[in-house]
Image (tube, rainbow over all chains, first blue to last red; front, side, top):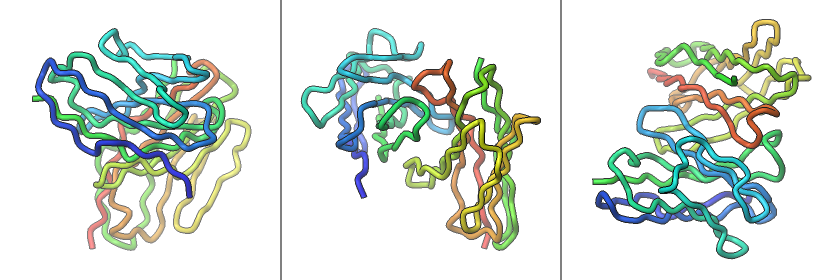
Length: 114
Length: 115
């Protein structure tokens, strides 16, 4: 059964460093998403991506964040200069259509900023 | 505004007991979708169910059942004969035409099933 994959599973970085979180969505999906879950809190939407551009983003997704689909398979989230409060689990998700279809979530990348 | 409320932060039950997880949502849209996800200790999000606003039929899948009531804006989730493997955090989520592509998640209910 196809699934969304994410690498790495755990990333530790120093404050101020750039990190790139990688995701491989399910191959025939057209919509891609990033969500964030701070430890013990709810899952929060960051950004959605369709047709090679951002279709929607939340207030959390400020200029420090960027997304890219550099090739036909990967979908990346870059945090330019990490802050302590960026420590969280980051989930990638993909889907066939809009919000009306379920989004398939990857296993997450746990980011720890020291 | 869209909002999902899961008032139960933590629930503990003894194995084989039934348990109901509550979810109350707010939306101005007539077209929307509701979801439940399970997050086991390993951290991944496991899709359980999607329900659209036009389908109020209750659904049963094995030991899981869902009760969707538009009149009370609730989408509750019941696990019958709970098992230790059901221990996890359960999230309810909403998406509608106003949210576009994003899901609004509730704060989750942490379920512990005691053997």
